[in-house]
Length: 158
Image (cartoon, rainbow, N blue to C red; front, top):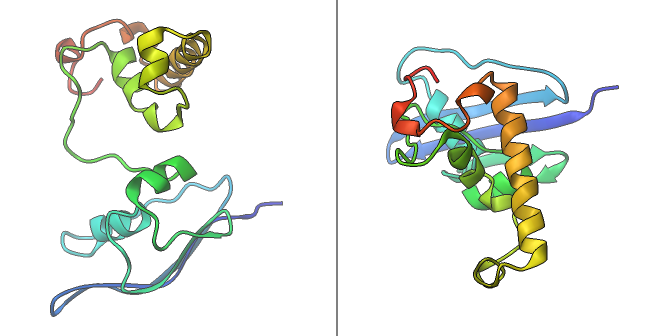
């Protein structure tokens, strides 16, 4: 049985006199994949920015796993499991593909700067877990063979 993963109820967003979103509602069940299509200016990016906490909706509610998410920051949204990519690529060019993926997992870590400086055992264990997960993610998107390539040397598609 599927459960509601993401629910938008009557979401509206205004920028001055411009209505970018007007009473948008949708429900995505766990395990479903959706696409959002429309012409330029239709509000697609604004909707993604509202869902990910970049913008706060002027009206309506956002639920993720039955939890109200309206006033969450982008960081809190990412920790909850909602994130987005942007159309422009912003990799760290001098780092490898695996290192770039590992950086993206920073919001899932618990060890702090002191653990890193002192090279504590739990920090090393966590770092290895992050590396293993990053390899899994690269494998998932078919880039496992590119893991150790420096990002500036990857093709645009990679």
